[in-house]
Amino acid sequence: MKAAQFLVTIEEKGVSAIIRKTQKSKGGKIHTYYIVEYFHLGKRKQMWRSGLDEAEADAREACIKVANGEQKALEFRNGDQLACLRALESLPPVRVSIDTACRGCADAVQILAGRASVIEACREWVNSNSVILPKITVENAVAMVQQRAVSDSNSAARQDELNVLLNRFAVILIGIK
Image (cartoon, rainbow, N blue to C red; front, side, top):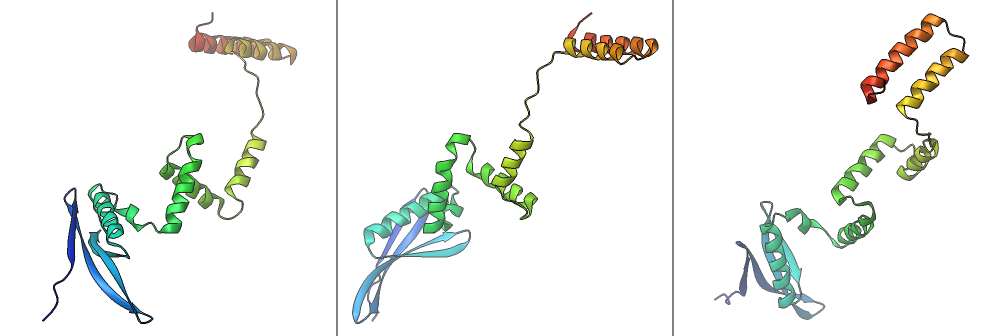
């Protein structure tokens, strides 16, 4: 006759997980393990834990994540979790979400196609585009173009044409007469 099975059902937010007890022999010693079973994206998943309390906590966490639609978060392993946490720590100063940052970085790496790193490309762009241009109002720009036409000895007809066009431009843009 088969011995009664150890089964614990954990239910959180309408999602359930089962904890089974099993024993394995290692090096002549018998070790007790608890297997947490739940369904994730249509497939049965198992987590092995050495203690019942740890198994119950992991089962509750898995149920809550599945119920909240955070099923992909369950796939993180130790290295992935640490990488994600480090990435999240670096994002607050730039006020960008992690998915936006990852998408932008992936696009940049794809565009660069191994010819340079993203940092190198950014530094080059800043160096080549760091020219500070003077702020010129439309009024001043119109006056400068008209003066240039006179100093370049443009014909009177060309100077009149520029005056008419530039004055019309200034009136339309900012209402100067």
